Amino acid sequence: MTTSESNNLTDAQNELYAWIKNYMMEFQHSPSIRQMMQAMGLKSPAPIQSRLKHLQEKGYISWQEGKARTMQIVDEIASKVPIMGSVAAGGLIETFSDVNENLDLSEVLQKKNVFALTVNGDSMIDACIAHGDMVLMEPIKDYYSLRNGDIVSALVPGLGTTLKYFLKKGNKIFLEAANPAYEPIELELDQVIFQGKLLAVWRKV
Amino acid sequence: MTTSESNNLTDAQNELYAWIKNYMMEFQHSPSIRQMMQAMGLKSPAPIQSRLKHLQEKGYISWQEGKARTMQIVDEIASKVPIMGSVAAGGLIETFSDVNENLDLSEVLQKKNVFALTVNGDSMIDACIAHGDMVLMEPIKDYYSLRNGDIVSALVPGLGTTLKYFLKKGNKIFLEAANPAYEPIELELDQVIFQGKLLAVWRKV
DNA sequence: TTGTCATAAAAACATTTGTACTCTAATACA
DNA sequence: TGTATTAGAGTACAAATGTTTTTATGACAA
Image (cartoon, rainbow over all chains, first blue to last red; front, side, top):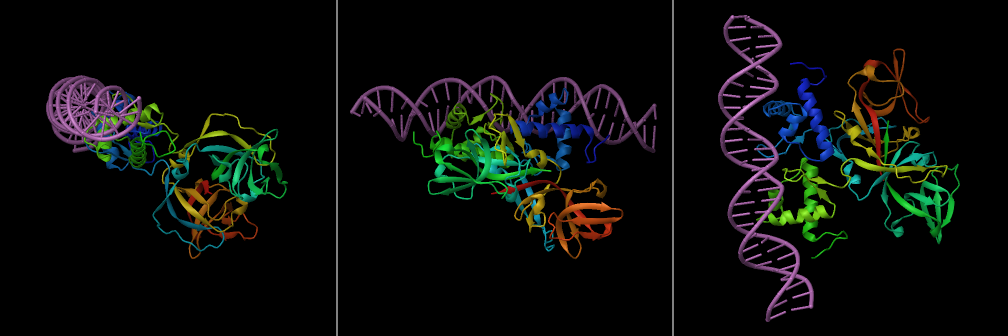
């Protein structure tokens, strides 16, 4: 039994596990044993079964016995992460409690036609949106669904696309930065195209 | 053909589609036709076949012909979002280009044992981590893997868990806030337990 | 060597499962 | 009212697939 990784899997098991995760991520369903057989360069399904059994015993995967392509990756996969509690950023009071909630990122991603934009510049820095952040946006179906204070990406012809607070006063529209160094932009409704409304911010360190 | 939703599906198709999405989200694999049949309260697979065909024709799902449980939801599901370009937050220069990259949140989530914490307070505000944000953390296997400048969640016995910059100077460890209003905490190595290292920040609006 | 263990191949088997076909009931429409 | 269309039930079938069994091979320790 040769192991090279720091987990408790053999090389063969590791290779299979990695392949499975990849396949399932790409195709949204489980591969069949014969597919895995081919991918691993084997000529019989038996070795795969054995490896799968080990992976299952060690808690990496599970499946419904006798049912085709019913594997599951046991890991909290995809978009759910356990919330372990809260950290004080200041007060130093809270402690790790084993709250068993999950942060579900897919909640946001499931909306129709969500798209992402890379943030360029620091005009929204006071809203804690920094240069390099990814903002997840929802297409704006209806101008009237916008509320004062929403953060929107707006296309101002001749100027480009910008991320700003939306503010409506009477017939005027103001695009305000969250950084006092930038002046608000005053516009008529027909001078601006609203592309999206901010749903979430994502920053990878 | 009775439709009630705003999309172009019949009620029956809508119900099935919703059920499928749910099933696949929960089990990480495709249901079989007979499972759908039961879930829809039908006694024959034919109607499901027909509904699936319609869902496929309208671009909602796809599958590999003849292969069991190989459905896919066509939507950008789960953790990938198309990156539509960049927005100026300041300069007003960039324009929507149809860059065809994807923001892949799962890249971070795939790491082992990632967990999330709710941020309490404003001591990291200058690092653009605000009260209420969720921080995604990676467990720290090895103290020596920490680099100066990493953001860590640390348990200081008697004080609690806190989110701070990690800084090591000689034998001393400093936990520094990203807010000048807070004093750095000076500690010995054995006075602190490092729980996690910051991978990403998530803020839902 | 000998025996044990794990892995791989090969073949066979039973079940699950997608698909196709026919028939009936319900519905829509002229 | 009658006809066309659609949805559902029932059945049958072939392919895909998980599972089992038997045998062979190589590594390793006694």
